[in-house]
Image 1 (tube, rainbow, N blue to C red):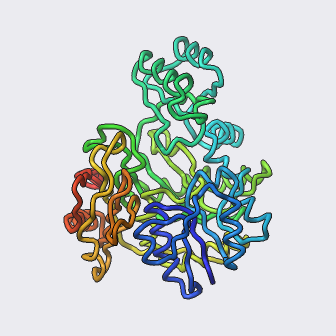
Image 2: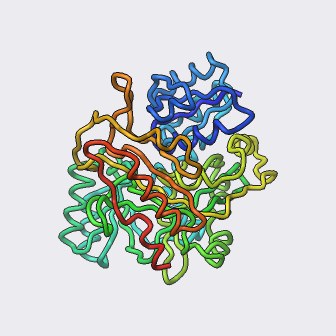
Length: 424
């Protein structure tokens, strides 16, 4: 088989690494890819949003399966373009990817089908939103830009002043562009956040092992929201009771709700859950693997990932016995100092070869490039260093040992990824 992967981050590197292990696959392409992905795949200079070019490339090169890693192309309808051309592709169509593409849509869906989530109101007019905040809101409260905003379009406001400023930022100043045309004002939930990824074939859903992400830039969950500074899997807070509840009221209910709406969902549903005192509730949905969640979940997957992708495409996921290793993994993101605001790029990265012969240690490239024959930094999040261990404490110790093997000039990381493990 020939496989094309669309994307250029650490998530796509993890997918490419896993696809390369499949005996079914003899050639992998990645568009546009990065310096790490180049080890497994031929990188193709086509951007993720150039749908027609991607489809033409897939036809010309007789690609058997395309895997879409990123949210923007899915929400934009890349799967529809590929299907129109008779190409096999893994991921939801545009009318299903709206589950991630519009927070207002997903909140309305949950309300309609009684899927547990926080109370909310949607606003298309800034004055209406301000009126609601001044007259009815209880603080703290959460403001969310409706559309895609690189994981950064969520503001937690402790006071009315902060909320007024938030409305201005999202709806008037359009800090997140058109993502802020609609605003979701949501009840603030307290509890543990847990991420659960799942494979879906339109009717059947099979969940993967749980994970927990760290969004804030600095230690102690301080600083600005980022795309994710590290993650661990499994979450010790995701108990059998929590799983049973979610199986009954959230997972299958979401797949069935989408089918009922005429929006058959095939691909990955990422459930962002909040474990509240009143039980688990859905914080958000994503329509693809999380990044960096993929970097701890995929290495623990026992199955041939290509077989699972194909089962989803063909609507026979019920035939797959999805299995994960009975261990743990921790990923620490090495970022460019100054991320997510401003940072320098182009620094040579040393020590990548150290991982070559080490079992259970991985380095997934997020923002890297080739320059004059060497690998240099090329983004805010540069690398995801993942390590396995028999349990979370061991995996965490291994990950923090492994980050020392890598060096570049403005290397920055959080020192407390997985600290919650100690409280479990």
